[in-house]
Image 1 (cartoon, rainbow over the protein chains, first blue to last red):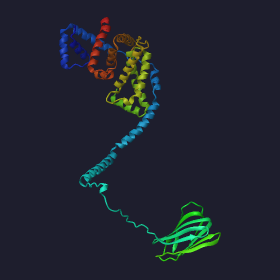
Image 2: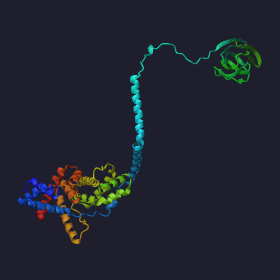
Image 3: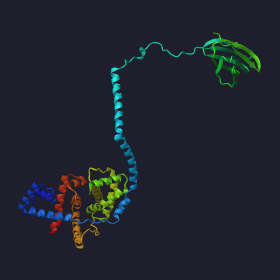
Image 4: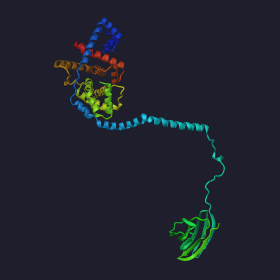
Length: 260
Length: 178
């Protein structure tokens, strides 16, 4: 009976794994133990037999069959995708960009550091809105219009009033009028002193509007309100002549004076 | 089997180089066929499993780690596929008569064929765990560490299985013969 410990040493000796010291110890044991010697011899023979076993040739078709089953196209497509992704990753982690990353990181770190320093040393005292008082002032002056003259219109089928307001650079003519029949309103002015800037009606009723250098004419029917804006180019102005015609017949006329 | 060469071939395959995988097949199909054949003992099954081994290898190439030798990884797939096939069929046929040895004279070839058959028969009589260990150690000259990686068992177990397998084969082959 071969001791299990020496059986292991025999196997390791066959595999060439024993240290010189272990080999020497085994040899001593083999010298003293005939059965162990026999085991060693048989295992060596077996090892030799196993090592000499021939390689078997595979069937001739095998290699081609293997290649036929391989889906090469999928790998090529995947490889193309991966190569694009890898190129991008390589570019992002390339040394060329390392300075950019370091610089960006430095800038971000600087901003964060400055924010911290500012918030600690230059912190503004917080004020509740209820603690605020005073008046809000708009630096830009508002346009100040003053009423210069008001006219009343009270003819047979036409009632209304007209107001002239002025500022340093503009005039506003507001016309509120109610007429049962169609009328034409004519405003004439000195063309060197005033320039037409705008016309607005408050109710969307069809009108005709004619603007000339020195006059504005517009038609009216029913009740409506009009605003005519005139730009002022000189401080002294002659009056605006207002005329109302019904069926081409003058039914009202008056002057709007600019009082200063 | 140069480790670096294999790793280059694998990288080329992953880059979509078909020729690189053809080179791997050329290099290893014979040896993988023999591993599988020694475990399964059937030529047709061995050819089928070899095909599957290379297909699985190709499909999982991106999981291969360069820390290992490529052929060890290939053996691992081959052994696993062989064991799967064995589990499925649960029966063992005798080795095919068409085996032809290489690079031998007529007499020697006959002798090796005879001996090869007897050894294969003896291998089929021992347990599958012992058989795979012997096949990897003798027919493919893998070290204890490589066998440990391929079979996913500790080196200590590799040694234990190898020594027991020898003992069993000695009983079957040598004691009857000598």
